[in-house]
Image (tube, rainbow, N blue to C red; front, side, top):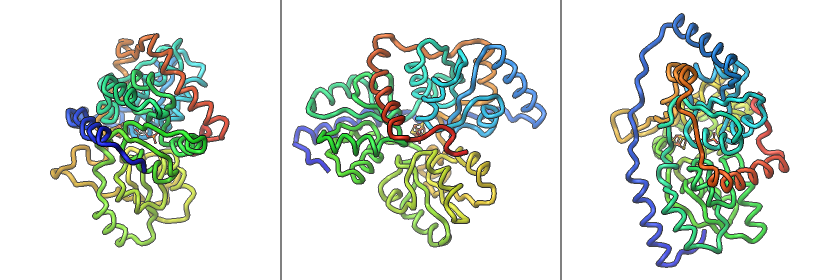
Length: 364
Ligand code: 13P
Ligand code: SF4
């Protein structure tokens, strides 16, 4: 771990102020639909997708109906690295991104010629919200000797200031590569993922102090108790979780890597520390395995998201149909910002290709 000067310590204290301003929304309550209503709605959306030469790209944390519809209509369900890649590979002229805003923005940055729509443009992310571009730029300017590596969960403006963009699938090998080249790293925004990468690689990393409000709720003490009740269960943890949770993991990885583990590890049971939306894909690939949600603070306690991202929950069949009907909620990126932001994203995609990381459909 890097040692910090008194001036840098001030920065450590200052930066989280932005994070504390984050308003975590309540989970939206969508009017319940019967099976027949759902099927009808899905049918209408499928026809709109064809008529508009559009394809659905959904994240594993979105509603099960969206994930299944994406697969049934020739779209794709994936982690954030593969979502970025799929957008470029698909011949469709419109990408409908069901996920959070940075995923739509990344798709638009890589595919400026395509129309990129999202069911709700207010679907943001606490990591993105907790890393405002102006404060972040000042942080980088004060540390010019460091290579700037930002997590994909950031705004286009923050990406435009970075040397590298990474996702959780690729953060370790990229930082390992930089460390081997003797480079010191400035990392943002997730302090837990940053600390995990720092511990695994031994790289000299200066960390922004952001966090994911969903993963931060997993509790080490309660997990330890649960593990004792399920001695045959493997513990799968997304690296946005706190250290005391990561330290109990049999496997730490991106959403795709956690799904692969359920399919490939011999254990009959899995304790899973990530957003519960991932269970749909895990069940689909490994129906005989038992999946247990890792403990959070619990409903009614300090738990705000209770293992389900409130921004991912803003995506539903209803507003997906609306966006296809109206063409509103389109992602636009300032061309000057795009010109700079595409470079660190492309660097990540090139690195992934050269190192065979996260090959498409690797959960199949
Ligand atoms: P993945 O890249 O692992 O899908 O993670 C994205 C994310 O937002 C996790 O909270
Ligand atoms: Fe952001 Fe956390 Fe939601 Fe992922 S789960 S989109 S990191 S708030």
